[in-house]
Length: 196
Image (tube, rainbow, N blue to C red; front, side):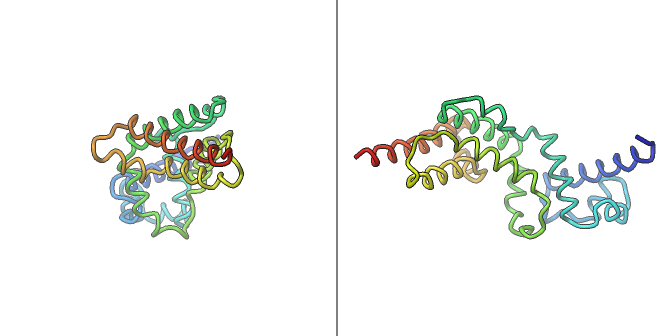
């Protein structure tokens, strides 16, 4: 790689990191291009040169965030055959991530409706989709009962669910166990109803 390309890549990385830091501290809605430029040590026009629109800036910020925050990768969960144990492991990882990144996630969730049409978070959405597919695989329920099970697992995965459960002294493990009981109860009730 040429020295010039290395400098370009380093500038892009600084801008992405600055954007991520601002999203984590004040949120996307309060993150201005001027603030990004100042934090990255560049001029505003340099930010626009590398990222001509918010989608490209958000894309770089998202990739940076996934890389440095330890966002869970569901690949390891796939080797667990029992869907209940897989759910327990997956929620442990996810809730641990939420605990370590609560301010960031709160800011992003709060501001997400303001940027719904912008894009740039496809990598995050794809990873969450992989998690969901992994955690919903292998449950023994009838097709008619699947929507309730899928909804329950999606609810258990949500940051808002974790935040609601843990804001009054419930531990991450307690929240996880409550959601595993919730999901397995739905799966069990569906099997019992279909057997009746």
